[in-house]
Amino acid sequence: MPKLLPKSLPDLDKEHWKYSNVNAVLAKFELVDQKPVWEMTGAFEFMTVDQEDTIHLIIPKNRKVDKPIDLKLIGEDGKNLHTNVVIDVEEGANVKFVERQVGAGAYWKNISIALNIGANAQVGYYRLCEEDPFCVVTEFMTVNMERDARFNALVVNGCSGFGRNEFKVNMNGAGSEADLAGLALLRGKQHGDTTVCIDHIAPYCKSSQFFKTILEDNSHGVYQGKIHVYKDAQKTDGYQLSNNLLLSPLAEMDVKPELEIYADDVKCSHGTTTGELDETPMFYLRSRGLNEEDARHMLIEAFVGEVLDKVPDEQIRALFDDRVKLWLK
Amino acid sequence: MLKIKNLTAEIDGKQIINGLDLEVKSGEVHAIMGPNGAGKSTLSYVLSGRDGYEVTGGTAELDGVDLLSLDPNERAAAGLFLAFQYPVEIPGVQMTNFLKTALNSIRKSRGESELEALDFLKLLKAKQKELDIADEMLKRAVNVGFSGGEKKRNEVLQMAMLEPKFCILDETDSGLDIDALKIVADGVNRLRAPDRSFLVITHYQRLLDYIVPDVVHVLAKGKIVKSGGPELAKELEAKGYAEIVA
Image (cartoon, rainbow over all chains, first blue to last red; front, side, top):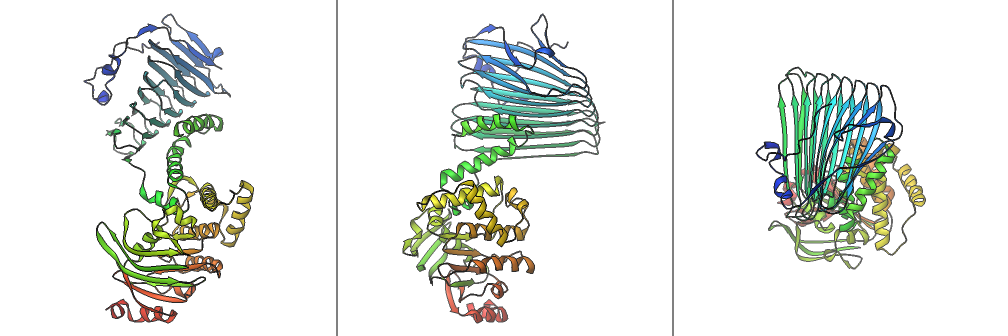
């Protein structure tokens, strides 16, 4: 089993922590370690736990799990929770996960998830955060993909005081496809960081990153997205888009799209926009009778809807819709 | 119906409308023609209340209601409709939801009850049939992936749904081939009524073969310099703007 989690804090000299000073935030907290207890529904038959409290889920070969497996971790005031989860989805298996992060009070959740997707297996991974606005959450997910594997992920992050969502996807097998989307809904003094690195190691792989942020008040958003194409990863199709909506003059968004390409026959694109609500569609809606508030609301819902559309499962989509509606109120 | 008196307006401190007078009576169709930069589109945005178009003088009333003091949505509720030269694409907003929200917003501000989903769909189906609009078009996001002709037909559909009393058509013919133009013009003609007036803004006379106006005005340097019957449009087409504007 791989060693996953260093309990030391990340070194801020590192380039990819540039915009998120987690040390400074954690210095304000007095926290004691607590053994994290995940609440899992539908996971029992797949689960083992080792001596070091790493939770291990194995979805056996060619197994299709019909109901989404529900993973929930509750944060508690004054506590540090460090947790490792390893998920092996074996060849040809098909499974969906809904991860819920909830909690109350000031706490730090440091979560490491390693997801290994076997050849021709399919995984949907949907994370919903309903954290306390004073907590710190750092979550690191490594995804290893074998030949023709499929990975579809959506993260809706709206509530931690300081949140860092990091994805490292290794496309080791030819023909695999990764589709990552996310929505960060930030207000107050919240800090939301999404950092994605996709390593195209094998040829004929396809990856997509589609991330949006809505920022109100004094919030601070970060998006760092990288597509790294190895020399042998010919015919790579890499796509990356980050759209960010500033609803307050005091909000700040830092965006860093990166392409690092060593193969010569690839298709890669990236784009990013950060701005206020566009005046033109606003005027169009108002000229059709919508008052300013309704028009804004419709445009913001549309902005987030494009991301939520990435969820193929209607029930899971409804879960996210409800959360986002609540936030938009 | 519409009375504009001595209207002046500017964008970024630059005066574009220079003392414009215009009166359109109930049921009439007026055309405004003019060279590029005459202030045609500016006039349509000033009347509909777009941000950045500042009125510096004069009045504009629709059936006695002072338009210039109203927000864009209040002008819509008062019965004003602008068919855009470049209809706006709004990704993520589905056509049906957009039409229903718009119609119910206007009904609400007129003190009418909102339409239930079923009644709304019935009404939409009827209008859709009249304008030959495919179901598939209504499933898409507003104007996203629409052809030029579809976008303009969509403007006419909105007009038919919202039933305004005064419609401004801003260069509705631009970018349309002759077949698309005929469909759009047919749609507009079907909406002509004794209690509804139109202001048709166009650069070319071609549109006026299909939507025949009662009065044609020539706009130059922000004011109306000549008015006449439909024959004036033909004269402009033959002689060009230079002679008349000069």
